[in-house]
Structure formats: C-alpha cells, structure tokens
Length: 569
Image 1 (cartoon, rainbow, N blue to C red):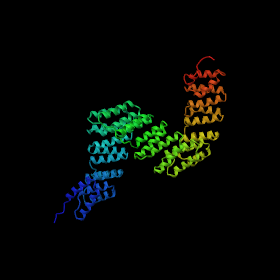
Image 2: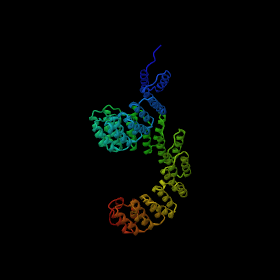
Image 3: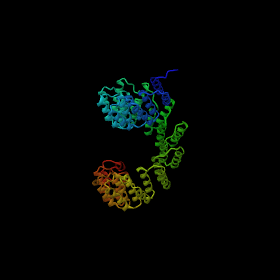
Image 4: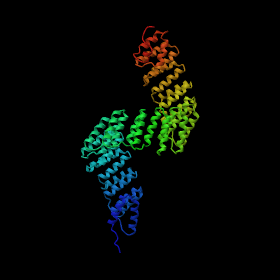
C-alpha cells in the first residue's frame, strides 16, 4: 500500500499550481485532499485564500480565513498580506483598510510589503490622502518604507495635480535612503509636463540619466507631449531625435501625441505625413490616432478627408468610439452639413454606440441654427427618453435656439418648468432669455429678468449688460441704455468697447451727435477704441460736424487712423 502524501507535499504542489494560475485545480485538489482525510495547515490555507481572491470569489476567501480561526491557527503576516492583496485586487479597497486596521490592533498588521499593497490599492482608487496617512503610520511604526510605496504615492499625487506634495515625497524618499527608480522619475516628469513646468521636468530627466537609468518610451512621451502642448516644436523634435538616437523606438503613443498636437494646430498635412511614417514603421494606429486626424481635418474644413479616415477605421478593423462620431458630427454641423451629421447620428445607434449629451447638444444647436426647431425639440426630448439628463449646456443650446427662432414663449415655459438651482444661478441662461425677449420686443419683461439677477445676489457679467444695452438701443430706448452703461461700474462690472460702441452707434443712428460725443469722451477716458462701424459712421458726418473729426483725432490709435488721414478738409 502506497503511503499517503504529507501536507508538505500537497503544499508544494499547490504552490506550483498557483504560480501557473491554475487556481481552480488547486481548489479541486484541496477537496480531494480533504476526502482523503488530510488536514490543511496555515500554509495551505493561505494558498487557498489567494486562489479564491484570484478567481474573484471574495466570500470563498473569507470562508477560508474563517476556517483558519476555527481550526485554531494564528494568522501570520502572509495571511494578512494575502487578504489585503485579494481585497484590493477585487476593488474592495476601503474594506481592506478596515481589515488592516483590525489586524494591526491585534498585532497582525503585516509588514512593509503589506502596507505597500494597501497604499497602492488606495492610490488606484484616488484615495491619495488615505494612502499618505497610512504611509506615515507605517514609517512611525517601524521606520521602513520601500520604493513601491513611494512610487505609488508619487504617481497618484502627480495624477491629482499635487506636484508640490509629490516633490516633497520624492525628497523624503531620498532622506530615508530609499533610492528613486525610473518609475519615480517618470511620474514626476509626467506630472511636471502636464503643468507646463518643462524646465523642472528636463532637470529630472537629466538627473535620471546621471543616476544610470535609461529613459523609456513613457518618459520620452511625457516630455514630447509637454513641449507640444506649449507649441515648443523645436524642443519636441529634439526630444524625439534624442529618443531615436538612444535606441528607443517611438511607439503608437509617441506618434499619436505628435499627430494630435499637429492636428489641433491645424497642421494636418504634417500630421498625415507622420501618420504615413507610423504605418511604414509597422506601428498600427489606434482609435486615438485616427480621432486626432479626423479632428484636424474637421478644423480646417476638409470634411471629405475626415470621412475617408472614418471609413479607413472600419476597414482596418478598429472600432469607432463615441468620440469618433462626436468629432465628425461636430465637423459636419460647423460647416452646415447637418443632414450628414444626422445620418452619422443614426449610424451610432446602428452600431449600438450610445450618444452623449455632447452629441445631442451639437445636433440640437446646429438644427436650431438652420431653423429646424421642430427636429431639434424632438432630439432634445429623445435625449431624456434615452436616460440622459440635460446639463446646463444642453438647456443653453435649446433655449438659445428657441429664442433665435422666435419661440420666446416656449423658451420661457421650458425655463419655468425645469427651474433648478443650477439654472437659476446661471447668468448665461438669464442672458439667453433676456436676449430672446429683446429680440421679440418684450423690453419690459427683459428688463425685469435682468433686474432679477441682482435681486438673486448675482452680478450681471459684461455679456448680460451688453445684451440688455443692445436690446434697449434697438428698441429706441437710447437714454435708458446709456444710463445703464454709466451705472455698470458701480454695480461691479466695467463697460467694454462693445458696450460703448452699441450706445454710440445708437446715438449716431438717431443723429443725436451731442450724446454720441459725450459717450465717445467717456470711451476715450477709459482707453477704449471705437470699432470700424462707429468710425465709418463718424467719417460720414465729418463734413457736416467738425466735432466728429475732433473726436476721431483724439483717439491715439485704432482703425480710424488708417481710414481717416489727419488733414484739413
């Protein structure tokens, strides 16, 4: 009769199988071991906990932990580490913190490595503050920390835009004799680049090299992106050449960064050359690369080329995403190709891609611009039926569309039916309604709505004032308009050149030269300039009223100096 294998033999087999990711086989063999009358030890149970969590079965993992306690075993640091790691892997990080605290109270808090696992888990769910707090506790407890813990915290702080805190953590890292590695340097370089602090990023890049580390594609990509964002093409090219010269092959991300930045600057020809080079080098573009090109072609109005890229995406077996559709829909709408945009919108549904509020807002706005208000309203309702709550931008678009197309009554009804805190505190929404009322000749209602802003404790912005001033002028209420302009500063909003130009144009149009000259004097005193329209009107009056010439000559610079040479008539 063959002797029964010992638990040590099974533990060795379990460990080997777990390393090969054969977690189900481990659990199956454990059941056979149990039926054979062989009891597990703590080592076995720790392996089983790990297998359960690796399979995503949290209940099973804690069931095994309960078995440890039931059998009288004392959990060790491996048990704690396995539990914490498993919970973090399955996204149960906050409960992992509670387990860690409970174990710590019982003297089973685990080691620095366990703490590092939990810190990393917290950073992944953007609980950086808790991660730093836990790190401080661990340092206070045993004075130890490892590079993995620091890397996780530094990276998370950088992603949160807390670069000062990240730099402090980097300095602390050195103070406690933990040597920064490539990951720490790369995180800082990326964080600094995102904030436009490129000189500091380059200092760390040079320090990284002096410490014997070879920058990888991730590091180079951060720098290239940083320089591109600030339009430093010469420096971006230098970094790109340095990358290639040091044997680091540009990857898809590198090319996408360059193509995206060139496209956003309208340099689509150069972007397309890079795109072709990328393919020649065997780098397959991803959806972000394609989207960047589509965006670029839309910006310069080459919609046919944008559509060709859209078609190429499908031919290459790459899945379109919502952004792809939104970009091309926006391009079509901006160039009055609304029917094309609507067809593309329908295609989204066919591909089971859910339009976003951005999609609906773009289409609703474009439809209103060409007077197709009925279709726009239907889409606005469809958006809500599809489970998308209109945001402030959505209401701005539909209200503006209704007002511009003479549906002021519907606009007011819509506003009143959905009034909420966000809408009632939006000066933009009020400005849209005020403009609509002015367009419809409802000056009394417009002024009432304008005054309502102050009653609610809001200071109307320059746009709101200019809309109200323009509405009053257009409806012949010039004195009221000028009075409102003169009151602006005391109300916390300084008039701009547009404010004065509206009023002066109104006065000149009604041949109220004295009032126009008075307003021009006020304008000059604020170092503001008349626009070409006002200048042109003054020019026509020069021959009949010398005051107009004197007013023009009193402005030190501006379009009128070119239009009107100073000489006697």
